[in-house]
Length: 376
Ligand SMILES: Cc1cc2nc3c(=O)[nH]c(=O)nc-3n(C[C@H](O)[C@H](O)[C@H](O)COP(=O)(O)OP(=O)(O)OC[C@H]3O[C@@H](n4cnc5c(N)ncnc54)[C@H](O)[C@@H]3O)c2cc1C
Image (tube, rainbow, N blue to C red):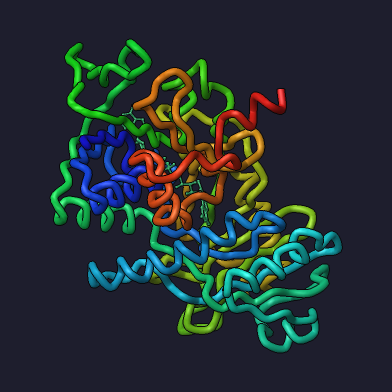
């Protein structure tokens, strides 16, 4: 089977690699390159954690993804996954955290529950005001995001895949099939049995009728603050990934590769154009991050900003992924809707998509397009 995968981010890159390993002849195409600065996968780091409220499917996928991240790290001799553990701070409304505990257990993801007092003893760097209790996930941590996208491409090429840097659009649907891909110079690429579009925040624009507003890119800001010199209290040797789930959800990663202490707010920002949007962080966003930093991590009060990034989430209406066949085109697959939490799942999601495309597994109803139709 010949497959063209469009988009070399976390979803498309891993899909291409799994298809290749299952015997397909695969061409991977990307307009700007894997983990490029416009892509949602183009950040420095992404969190991997299994606490997912009542959503069993994601907890199971995290367990599988962890296996695959480790396996491929070994295969490539590169470090992509940093097992720092994750500290999940629960607020007054802790239904999400409570619902997670049995699912973490079921998936075999090791964790501890701590009272706020126990957590404060273990992490004296943190002010636990407004934290009711905490989960420490042992196998959670972070992934080096854009670097991992490059590693996937290099692995894919080494195993016989083909990569082309091209911007493509879907061609006509004829006789229940996509006829091929249109290139900007008017020519066509039409040598495949199946086409997978894993175009992150661009998916809605490429398929306005079927996806359209079901993928809404929002502007998200990320800040990296400097830690005191010679002080390892906030670096990964002694500090975990953290998620602070109070009225809002803030999260961060201790300085990876000495890049600074990352702080981000998961609240959905304003609509954002992933192609032409300027990526300059706002003064208000910086002030809010700084105020929070001083409150939650008193040792970092007044720390200088070292770097900032503006990225976009590609949100589906229910924040769940979209993996489905295009209605009326049996050889066309749509993959996206990472909704601010997709990166970690890349290896497991790619495995699922490959099985869908090769006809080995049916579409997962939780990720199907029909879920929107049945709700409307
Ligand atoms: C600030 C921020 C923090 C996040 N934190 C986390 C986290 O901690 N943990 C986590 O698991 N997830 C996190 N996420 C979410 C995660 O990064 C995304 O869900 C995931 O990276 C999406 O991957 P993707 O492959 O769908 O999209 P992308 O990475 O955007 O890839 C799509 C690719 O398609 C290409 N493309 C688009 N149009 C075309 C075209 N016409 N022709 C050819 N190529 C095309 C693009 O160049 C791009 O490379 C975060 C996201 C952001 C923005």
